[in-house]
Amino acid sequence: MQRRRLAHPLPPDFFQCPVLTSSEADAMIASGVDALKHLVMHARLDDTSAYKWKLERATQDLQVYVGSDLTKAKGTVVFMSVTELHATLDEAASLLECDTSDSYRTFIQRYNKDVIDCAVLATLAPRTPTYPRNYIGLKWFVQETPLPCRNRDFCVVEVRLM
Image 1 (cartoon, helix red, strand yellow):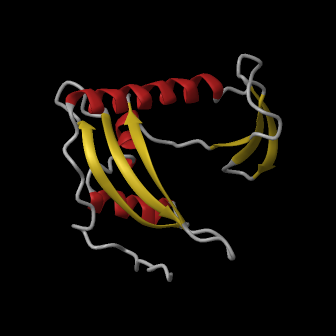
Image 2 (cartoon, rainbow, N blue to C red):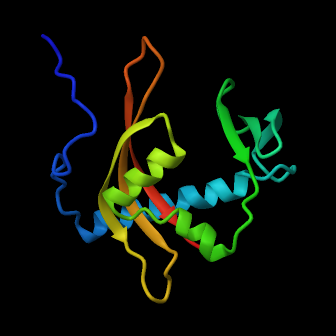
């Protein structure tokens, strides 16, 4: 049986997502918020992190660390990069505002050259006047991989809480 290869980018109406129940949306939101808390707790370079970080590469503008997760199976590797952004919080937040498929695609084209397609599948918690920088959504993207591997696609819960 021959597999059909999709051409990217996919058409805007390619995904027909089912409407989520409130309990399904709440579960995704909780999972995303928990993952964000885990990220913030463990993205520390001191001894309070469950990761043992080692500087792998550094340039004037970027440091890349490789970490070993001390709580996981041997051989589990994580990566972290650190840079400085000279901007106000509002300016920094505006860089990450990609709540629609068009703005997400623009962001990906600018900052993630190895991502070849993306889409916003659902908005779980939109920005509000009270919390204009916060957003939680379900997103999809395709990552280009080196040959002979096939490209890989991912669905993620994106959480921005500022």
